[in-house]
Image 1: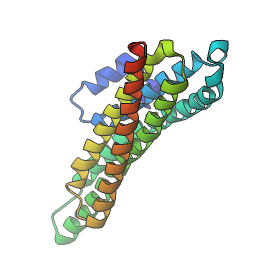
Image 2: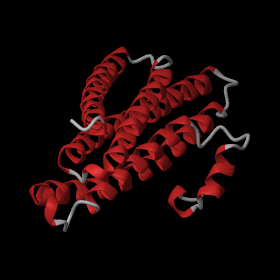
Image 3: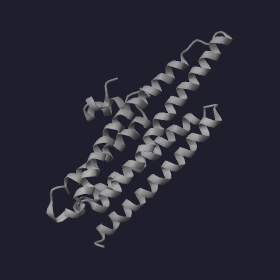
Image 4: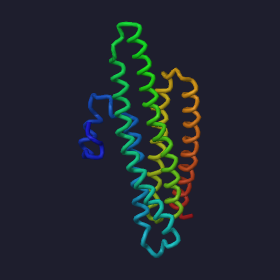
Length: 212
């Protein structure tokens, strides 16, 4: 599988719609987050250098750099999510004829499940930063592009919830209760923070659309 960033949109969609289970929801969540990042970058570029938005120049310059970095990170995680899934599928094909083979296979599957959980957790963690960056764009960005910030926030929330779902489905099969508990706490924190930021963004969007 090529790096997703090297594919045309049409080529990626064809791969996504094929009978292959990967790339799947985790990779799509990461790509949604990357798109959201680029929307924030666009709003920053529509603000920077315009005298009537002078008060937001510094904030939007920072937002632009953050957006670029996040977009690259999310695209890398989209690839890593598919790689983690493929790794787990390989462990399932390990031999299981003897007790020793079954033990090795079980341990390998548990390790691969943890790896497959850590990737969506990282996506989820970064959506918190993404939503905070969208909030900055909503506050300081060009008001004529406020709906683009709103779409960015909605995509960030969808990415966060999608990543959390993918982490949860893996955690349900992980036997390490300490690892699972730690992951669930992280999920709750990042989801709550992302949702709070998104709510604030959408409130600002509604206010500006209503002329307030």
